[in-house]
Image (cartoon, rainbow, N blue to C red; front, side, top):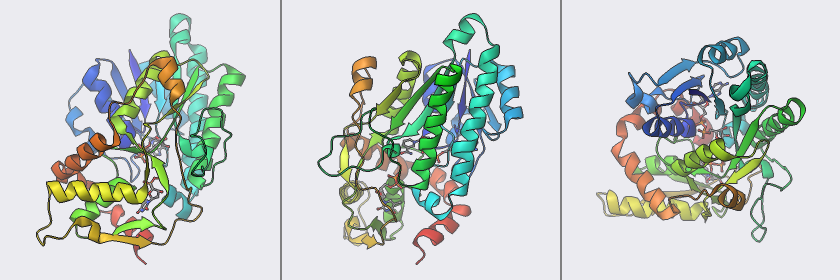
Length: 353
Ligand code: NAD
Ligand code: TYD
């Protein structure tokens, strides 16, 4: 038995592959294009592991995906591959349309051709699990109820619009062709191997480098943070027992304003790695120009997943953020590798002015 994971050299996909192979003998075929966000360093501990087959390639390459499906006969495809950064989608939406929409379409077509040719249990047990985001639901006001699976889609950024489109394609491939799909919509993740263009790793690394900690606008935007290992356990649970064609919201009931997140990181760093000059890291906080179209609040109602499938997150924000800061302090090699090259160009483009 095997599974095909796409985007398994990225942040969440990488954590998923590592967790899967730590707990199971089932082979993982890991298809990743290795864009700027894909890092084989994340998967270094799997070198020589015969249960990990890494293939560099695009989810939109039907010939390649068709070959992989024929050769390995996976019982599931778990689609993490995407362009995932809102700020990059504002600077250049084209790649988001190409991978998140056209790429998902091609992957669905490859999956459909493969699944339709299966027979018996192989056919009835096959699953296509699409990993998506809460950002498809748009933004909430302070007093709105958290997003549930029945909220209308109201995406506001090129990123969220492209993910919304991909979710609709996945849904349609189920209703029209019967493809056995599952979709998960998750809130903001954080944890090990998070590429430092996103808020939490960026703040940790800038703090340690003595650089400004850029807070967009007033810093009162709210995100609902989920430790990445909890997201991975939710995906495993949905894959094992989710109802076909259903969507499941995944969240940790951890709503925090951005400024509070930044202060939490500063406090932990003050304790674990105090600055030589005796000042606190919070003195580096700098308010910068807000993101255009910045969603004010995301919050997830994860009761469906909890009630139907018995999933619960293991970490609170307080335990998860402490583990995360400690991980970055202990993994300076990984950080050095991912922050060379094109990363510098991005930082200059986004924060240069
Ligand atoms: P990421 O940007 O860290 O990783 C994406 C991976 O996909 C990279 O390894 C990249 O090389 C690969 N990739 C990109 N285009 C590809 C293509 N055309 N073919 C094959 N591989 C390709 O993203 P992430 O944070 O790990 O997110 C994974 C998934 O989870 C995405 O679909 C994202 O929308 C979703 N998601 C992310 C979060 C979050 O907080 N990071 C929250 C909810 C949902
Ligand atoms: P991010 O990690 O980019 O995730 P998303 O946009 O998908 O929620 O950003 C999280 C929040 O932090 C978001 O409200 C934007 C804000 N932010 C900053 O204030 N400063 C930064 O430098 C970054 C990257 C994000």
